[in-house]
Image (cartoon, helix red, strand yellow):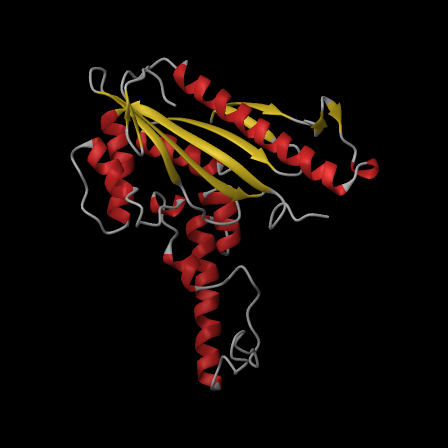
Length: 272
């Protein structure tokens, strides 16, 4: 069968934040600060500086992963004395003293992580504390809208995440920066779809692949027909979810009159 994707169960996500410009500026400046860059007084300058095409902007840009989870791999069990380097196949520990130091630091990291964060290991921290999904992932800028007369800014972002959309990260930035946060998400194989405000989501389940308005069954459909149906289904569904997200944002209690996209300026009165 034709290869459609690299790995199953990725979620295709769009995010929107909409709030008082000063709150959105604090959100963007947090990203700049965590990247070691100069913060800005102007929201447009801040957005363009953060998403300048050179920076790697991820969820951790706004919620950094504590060093203990990047320095110590406590997700996996403690290594044995004779463990080998994955690449070189050379022994990781040159002496008993070196191995004893590793064991002591491992045990200390486990204790510290559990006492400080309530979890042990980067996997549980990412899934249960920081993001709501397995890995830190990219956050791309799609467009932003500024209403100077009302002091309101909206940013539309996107990014793929494994297995689930990053609900914990979205709830974190909502509370941390006092933002209205919206999401649309489509999970590739299990028919999971969601859209709306992060604390009041709508869910769609069981959408079928269609060819000429007829459901497609994998067991009686050729590879070519199934691939065609899947691509058409996916394109239409993602467009539908994106449309629902934008509709939610535009119908929220605060409207934007100035729309400035990532690549230019549009004089519409709604986010696009």
